[in-house]
Length: 261
Image (cartoon, rainbow, N blue to C red; front, side, top):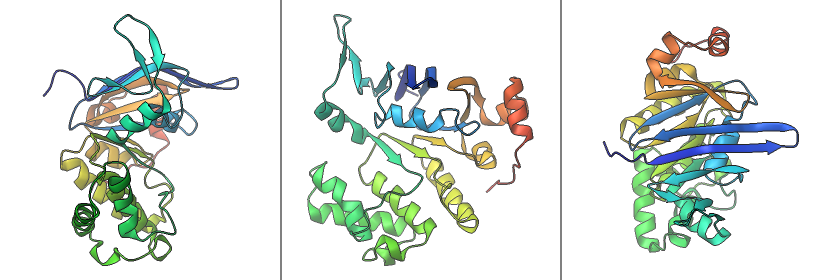
């Protein structure tokens, strides 16, 4: 494994009014790792993901991807400088983001949803973008949906298209913000199985999830957050079987862990 983490998060803080959503959060992710972030609703999990990708600007702290700062940087002279919006937009595609609500463009076909980013941002030719998109759709079992519109898809299909759209940008890392929360119960297992297959392919992933059974079976490490801070982290099996923090023990005692695909 490389000595330098693919993702370095250092001392991220974020306040909304009187509430501290992130409280000095730091952690690393190495290439090929799958990290699941768990915790009670409102503990800062989604804010953390959005701050890593600078969709939400943190008040303080630093994010580095493959050694390059995103959003705010410390210069060689030790001066802290906020990057311009253009710089951030140029670096952000290295971090893919899969949203809870899919965020597909409703007026575009599935194929156009997937190819728009590579063509506009990565300057890939339309022919190459469409070829790659069709390969992704085939991999995801959606080859017959290329010309469909999002309104014609099930929730599970929409989420798989959203993941395909993210992977088409060839990111170094993919962030997933509760990717099953907007799905009907019968669709959840379908997407979890697919995510586990994706995790097994070597993709570097950070997932916010309430699916603790999935975290146990797919994650290399689990991070437990409470009140905007990381209060415990460790290998998935060890953390779930032998939690040390009392808040984590209480949290786990209130959950049903039933997924082991």
